[in-house]
View 1 (cartoon, one colour):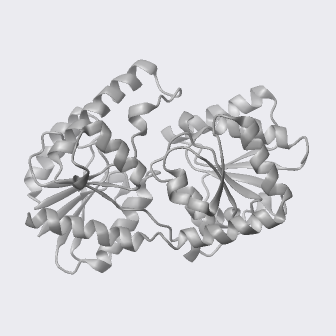
View 2 (tube, helix red, strand yellow; view 1 turned 45 degrees about the vertical axis):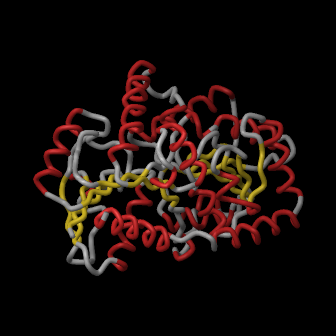
View 3 (cartoon, helix red, strand yellow; view 1 turned 90 degrees about the vertical axis):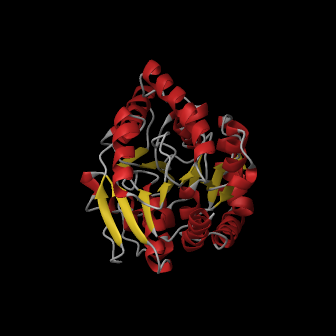
Length: 367
C-alpha cells in the first residue's frame, strides 16, 4: 500500500513527534511505501534512509485556502491508499481514507496576546470547524494522552472507540551532552519550549524573582528560539521582564539537543508552569536527563508525569514559589524526584508509539 504522511510541521515544536514517527516507521514497516509531505525549506531537514520513503514538497499554509484546495489536489494526484495528517489542519473535504493526530485542544480554549485578536479569533473559529469536521471524516484519530482524547471526544461528539491514545516518548538520553559554557557552574531553574500565553512564563518569572530574595545568585534559564514567528512571544517576554526590572533571567535562544541535555542535567530543577498541555514532552525529557521536575497540575500533566513530579497550582505564584523552594532546600526530595522521574520515563517509548500508529494504519487500510 501507499501511505502519505503530512509532515509539514516536521521543523516545528511539534515536529519531534513526526520525525520520531518516521524514524521508527522506517525500521518497523517492511511492506508499505511512504510519501512524506514537507515544505520546500524542510526537504533537507529529514532524510529517509529507507528507499520506500520518498519526500514530496507541499507548500501549503496551515488553515489556508491553499491547504483546502491545493493540498487536496496534490493528494488526489498522488493517489495514496491512506493519508496520515499529523496535525488537525487538513483539507476538510478530502474524501480519501485518512487518520489524524490531534495533539491537544489548546487552539479551542486559549488566546495568544502576541496575535492580532480579530485574526486569532477567526483562526480559532476555523479551527473549531476543522476539529469538529475531522472527527467525522477521519477513519481514526490519534491523541497523545487520555486527557486529550477525552477533551476531543467531548468536543467533537464522537465515539471514544474511534480514538487511540499513543503516548509520546523521549530518546534524549541517547544524546551525548555538550556543555553550555555561559552557565557552567551556575545555579539555575530551567524551562525549555514555546512561550505563548498558555505556557504561563510570566508567573514563572514572578516566582523566580521572589526566590532571588533568598537565593540571590539563582538564575532562570529560558530555552527557545528568539527568531521567527515562534520567537515573538519570547521577545515580548524578555521586553516585559526588562520593564519590570527583573534580574537573573537568561534567554538562551535555540540550543541543539546536546546542549539542551546538558542544561537538563545541570539545572537545580526543571519547571513546567503551563496552563494547558496535550502531553508535556519537555518535562519527560528533563526526567530522562536526571532533572527533578516541578510541574503545573493542569490538564494532561499529572497523567503523564505521575509521581515523578512535584505539582503546583499554575495560577498561584505563591504555591509555585513554595514548591520550587522546597526542592531547592530539600536534597532528599530532589533525589526522590529524580529517581521517580527515571521510572516514569520507562513507561514511554517513541518506538511503541510508532508500533501503535502502524497498527492503526493497517486497520484503516483493511476496514
